[in-house]
Image 1 (tube, protein in one colour):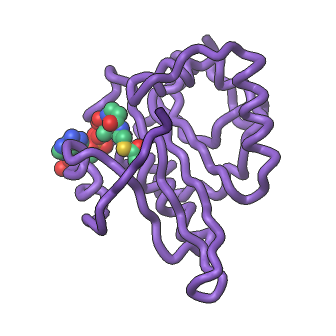
Image 2: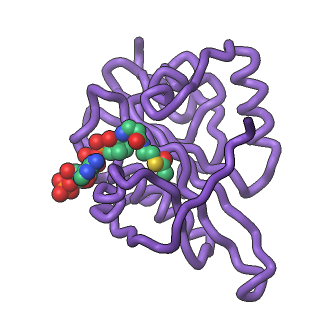
Length: 174
Ligand code: ACO
């Protein structure tokens, strides 16, 4: 599949928000950009399924979800790393911006759904995704960026400059 440049895609947020330093440090065969409206066809759900259940909802349903995220302004910042040789996604992650009343109407960034395809792990791509999302969060004015992860993945986030803070708790709907 031929690599599709950003100019031919409908991107979910302005690509200029991705720190230039991260773009420049990426291996030449890879490209980092915001999620695009046709990324369903670039293996988005296949890569996501390395993290957790991500069943194939079909193109129409996937695009409805893309439209829904796009319609909520200044909130969802999903990005992907794409292989220039295959035009397929190899890594991804999302920043969600939260508006608060505390600290003088502050903003907090939430890092979600970080995943690197099994074949591409160990090349520093996870770290690049985190650097990009953290940079976007800071440039949008968030006073902190937080995330939940397993104990197993904590050393990865420590390598990305994150520290243990509090305890994650969850109640899944039964
Ligand atoms: N334990 C210890 N160190 C690790 C681990 C780990 N599990 N994973 C990576 N590292 C280290 C690397 O050795 C590297 O160290 P270095 O900078 O000294 O060389 C550094 O962290 C960066 O590693 P990357 O190569 O960038 O990691 P990778 O691209 O493989 O991505 C990730 C890491 C995202 C955890 C990947 O393994 C993955 O997709 N796992 C499956 C899905 C998953 O668990 N995602 C995280 C969910 S939590 C969330 O989304 C908030």
